[in-house]
Image (cartoon, rainbow, N blue to C red; front, top):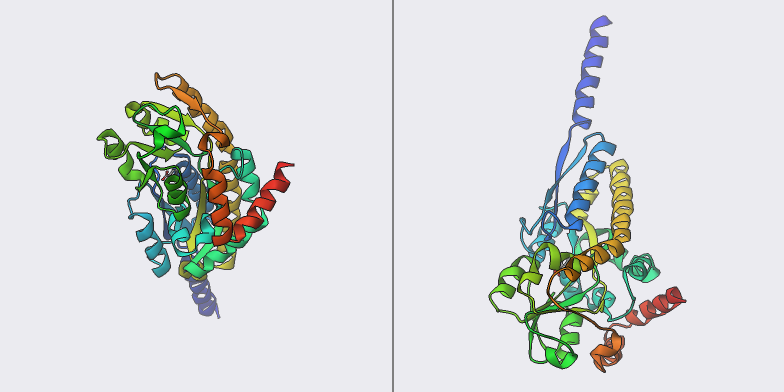
Length: 323
Ligand code: BEZ
């Protein structure tokens, strides 16, 4: 009898050891270590490790170390990568509705963007990530989009014919084509060199990157336009998600939702802080609003309401929030 008890206790100990064993996961993102997305991913990994008592141990791979977003998406689909923070470029290339948040002046700043990302349309698109083999976890964003040019750019006429770096979204390319510029899709990690050596004349970017990655060092002017929001989607590999226990999935979901929203809430301050830093340089900062871009904004809406009818719903949500 005693023998049986000892054996039972040993078995229970072994099982305990197996279930308590940490599994290592990976989260990939294209932003460099000082970027707010990377800092947030690191904080989330620490929180999840603590709350799962080490069962879910997520290693953070910044700066596109695991590949560009197209490669990361593939890895997520096969289960070779577990989590990622993605811009919407790759999803919008597969379903244009994922690009509707890029509607120019749909919100007037980070606070409005945060609300819109909590709306019904955003919720619908987050749960729709399943069709890409992903589990949508949370909506995040970076700072508002601004324009950094090598030369002087006092008006929209100065953008004509200029090679302006964008993310490869049809919506962004279309906007810049309507302005008469030559949109040049380029991933974030390639941007500094391309701007420094004149391969591009300008870029669409945020103040955070402009300051931290020192794009301003090669700039002749910065247009403070706040013309678009720039969402991020936090996702898990759909395959990997299925292998996690319900308890761990709940912990991961809650941590992602709360921490990513808190990050979004920091962006008004982040934009203001880096704008102040840039105002301290000798690069002129030109103020621009919707009217600066002339007919391009209205023309853009006329076309994209037809191409992506979900945009009309998003506009209605944005209008209700603005009241
Ligand atoms: C960009 O490609 O412009 C970008 C990507 C991630 C975070 C912020 C900006």
